[in-house]
Length: 178
Image (cartoon, rainbow, N blue to C red):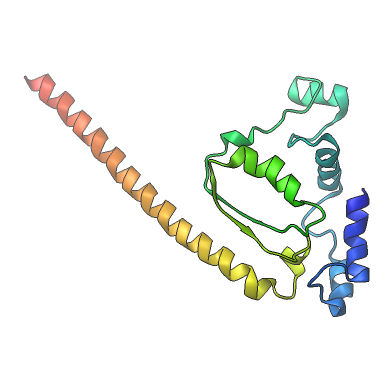
């Protein structure tokens, strides 16, 4: 809970490196937006357990929900989608050690790129004054390039799969008439 409180205090005291103080009222009116109390509870559980796991409902709740006393842990090594990681050593909620231990060590085969943005705090990735000029263009460019690449690869694979099915069906037809 301390990190979440620190996050809100960062809005007020300006510890966020690129925080626009004139927007405090707007940010606080919409915080925590796009989340829920359950999400916040889950994030606290993840920090305390040091595991990336499903929500912990307690022993009885977990038995009812998952059929086991502990929540299942996500196996990050099973992720096979190329992923770009944007991070900062100045992020108090996801520091360099967290990135190394929790993500890079488990997803190293799928990390397509890792971009450190020095002097970004956690909320600077969203609210930072320079995020629109420094971060978002890189993210959009990367996404657009990969979406085109992934789409093209998908089309080629679909065409190849369809052609293979066609060849197999033609071979079956030829064998029937032979």
